[in-house]
Structures are given as C-alpha cells and as structure tokens.
Amino acid sequence: MRFFSILAASVALLLFAALPATAAAPPAPYFNGFESPTDVSPPGADAGETMFGAVRVPSGTNGVPSADGGFHAIAPGAGPFMRYGGYSSVWPTGGYTTSVDIYLDTAASPISADLRFDWSSAISDPGGYHRRDFVFSVGTNGTGGWVMSASNNAPGWPANPARDPYTITTTGWYTFEHRFYDAGSGVLAVDMSVIDSGGTVLKTWTLSDPTDIIGVTVGGNRYGWLVTNAIPNLPLDNITRNGADAVPPAITISTPADGAIYALNAAVVADYECVDNPGGSGIATCAGPVADGAAVDTATAGAFAFTVAATDVAGNAASATNSYTVVADKDQCKKGGWQSFTAPIFKNQGDCVSYFASKGKAKGNP
Image (cartoon, rainbow, N blue to C red; front, side, top):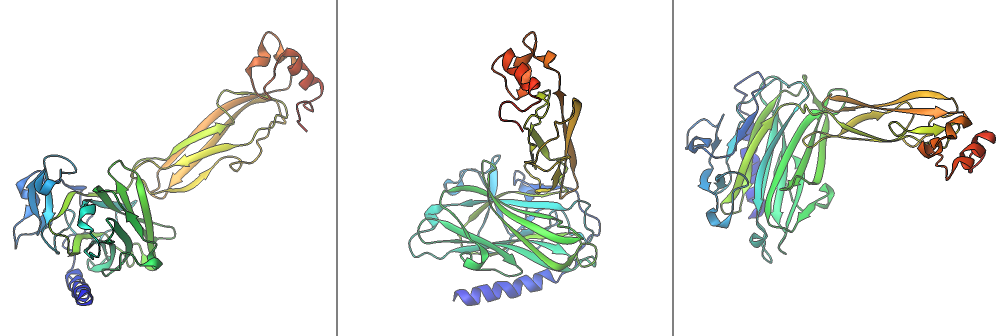
C-alpha cells in the first residue's frame, strides 16, 4: 500500500511540476506567518501569494502553540503548496533561501507506526518550466522519534542509510531550509538544513547535479509543496523566501593579537577563523598573508598590520586587521616595558634584557 502511495505522489509531482512559471523576474522576499485570513487560499484560488490547501488555526489548536504570533496552519493531508510570491525563470544574483517551520510531535511516533510526509522546494529552468525538486523526506521511526533525509524529485525513504539520515527525538518546531546557491563554475548546489527553534543547525545535506547550470538549465524559484502527508493536521508556520544572503562573514584574529608587542624572533603563529553569520551559506574563502597555523614573520623590527579576508558563497566579502609591533631593542625592557610584551612573556626586566642580549636565543627561541 505504501508503494502505491509513493508512486501516486511521484506521478502527481511530475504532473504538477510540468506547469510553466508565470513570472520571469525574481519575486520580492516572501513571508507567510498565517496571521491574516488571506494567508490561506480556498479551493480553486491562486496560490501565488497565499498557501493553497492549508487551514489557518489559532495558536494552541490541538495543543500546539504557534511557532510565532497567534496563528499557524495545519495540513489535513497532502497537497498544500505556494509559489513564494510567484514563480521565476530568472536566477537572482547571489541565490536565495526558502524555509518552512514544521511541528514534529514525538507522540505521533508510537511503536510500529509508519507515518511520513515529504516537503519539496523546487527550481525552474530559464524557460519557466520545472527543473528539479529538492525533497525533505520525514517519517516516524516507531520509537518516539522522527527520522529524515534529503533527495531529488520524488518522495524518498526517510531512513535510507545511503542518504545519511538524521533522527529527532524532541517534540517542537523545526525549520526545514533550502539554500540555493552557486557552488562554483555556475553549478547549482542546495544546502538542505533542519534547524531547531533556537537556531541551531542540526543537520545539512548538500545536493548538486553537474547538469544544473545556472542561467543555462537553471532559472529561479518554483513552489514549496507538501507532496505527501500521512500526519493528521500537520502544523506549519513561517514560510519564507529570502533573496541572496547579504550578511558578510565574521572574522576573528587571535594571533597576531591586535596591539600586541612581540620581541624580535618571537615564536608566533597565525591563528584566525572566518564564520558565516546565521542565514548564510558557508565560507568559500578565508585567507591571511600566511596560512592559518603557519609562522608569522617576526624577524624584522617595526610596525605591522595583519589582514584576513573572507568571502562567502553568496559573494559577501569582509576583512579584519590586527596591528602589532616587533621590537629589537633591549631598552624597551626598561621602566616596566618588559610587562607589555605578548611574546615572549617575560617574568622580570632582567629576563627581558637577557632575551635581547642573546639575540632571541633565550627562552627556547631558535
């Protein structure tokens, strides 16, 4: 019976996906929090701006608080969908992100249960027709947990070991996010992430096909669609489509420390880190004048600046600079100056003078 339901859903997906896009330009950012009665569509209505097939309910319905605000939606069965404000055949510069909040109730996963749903976010081609689906397959595992994986174009087996499945055992709202971006050389990649209500990314699957060439075989966004659903009144909230990630990476330089004073030939190594901000898509490049963990040149006295640059896959760039001084004069040890050194750290003025007198060979330096 399960085989036929999956087959039927696959056929429905292919038929539904065949419809062309109705708009060329990338739509504006989209958000549907189900706070307005017009955030859901009655049967037969257009689902460009609203969600077709869902039912708007107040927070607390069936014991479920809304993820945000005073309302959310429930899906009585399979089929609810929306177009994130409109289909597009044009790839937006920097890519885009779609997401939906879905409530997972561990009480719906009793022993021997096999209840599933599949959520897809799809991409169009430049002609405005369907190109490919990116599907989260989620199901009860029969022991009070939810197991999930990601695949293309058809409902999948949530616990498929070949798909690196992930299991959730805590009831609550979870964000299912699709991040569409250029992985390099114009090839589309999609990071499919499940995120808890605190914003922690629990698991990410990255799907990419070398034939998905942005601007050639890949256009813009398509639908968000609950392809299959066997969970009674599955709660949904906060459906979004955002434009390109506009948040630059965050850079931390530990060493050379900003404003530090180093003795000539001090043992110092570069130590820096670049981290993309929440909502971003990972660091593509992160580099300083020397590799992270490699020796910094302190063989020459003077004032220096150490700059690290980072660029994420959406093209956001950032840089950070730490200034430092290298000293070669024992006179710097006087009047408490020995206390200001970062490397080496001297225990008294004599220790500092001895270091310079030995031309940096004291305290274990070469």
